[in-house]
Amino acid sequence: MHKQKGFSLIELLIVVAIILIIAAIAVPSLLKAKASANESAAAATIRTINTSEATYNTTYPGNFGSLAQLGPGPNACPASNSAGACLIDSILGCSGGTTGAFCTKDNYKFTVTLATSADYIGFGTALTPTYGSKDFCSYGDLVVRYSLDNAAPGSATGTDALCASYTPI
Picture 1 (tube, rainbow, N blue to C red):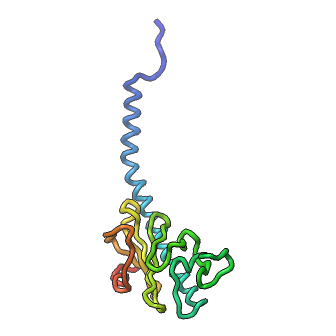
Picture 2: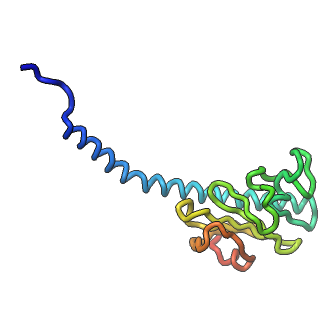
């Protein structure tokens, strides 16, 4: 009698079960790593907004800009003016990024609210808690802060006092 070579159905099912168990263990870690990467990118974006606001204020003394004004606006960069300073990319400086409006980047929503001509407030919140559990903000003091509240994902707005209550990075 000739013996067949190969795997039995039971052996294949055991291998598939082991692979599924390993995947079930790895997926939560992968999602946590993705959220951590999004949070790091959001903090870096707030730093970019701070640098852009400082540059804008130096170029156009006494003024700060909305996201649309900091971005390319109607200009073709490198040409720039106060309506489109070309200090941030067109994704963050989206055309909808007027005072209080949002621009989305790296699964976070960002906004810059011009409190007065002498101050601005930049906020970033995750689109959903699975993308990140921290909110980020900064204002005229240029310190990036975070909060673990994330009470209303995607609705980043606030005041200097709210931002000042967040923990500095």
